[in-house]
Length: 154
Image 1 (cartoon, rainbow, N blue to C red):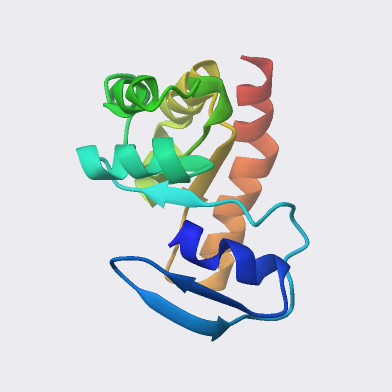
Image 2: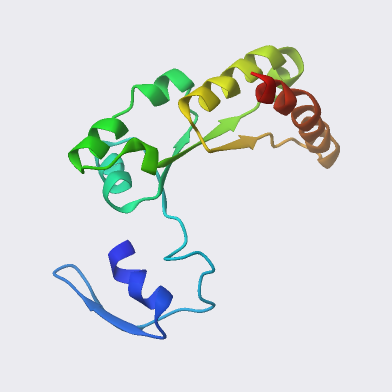
């Protein structure tokens, strides 16, 4: 799809055809600020997802993977097969922070986030949804005031 919509993101309108699709006079607005296009993040950990990251994506977004699991994934093999350096692929993960672990296991959370940092992850999405706004703000405060500074020191 990146190949199909690449031109319309820069031009007023474009026509694209391949064996798989025909797009006539397509375009969209407003035009993206990022050049040459907005970053393309690919999620998933199947061989096909890794192939798409290596050939079309700007980054890989993992969900609920430990640092150890992220190290052992097939992304490096897909990047090697595509002739692409791993340093050209941004890495991201979504981590769910349970309320109990945020209260009782702050050190374990810091260790986990520091593990991602050592792997070179550029983005971490922390999911700390709670039942009330007050609980969410309390979790955000804990992350901002205690966990993030500790990861920064590691």
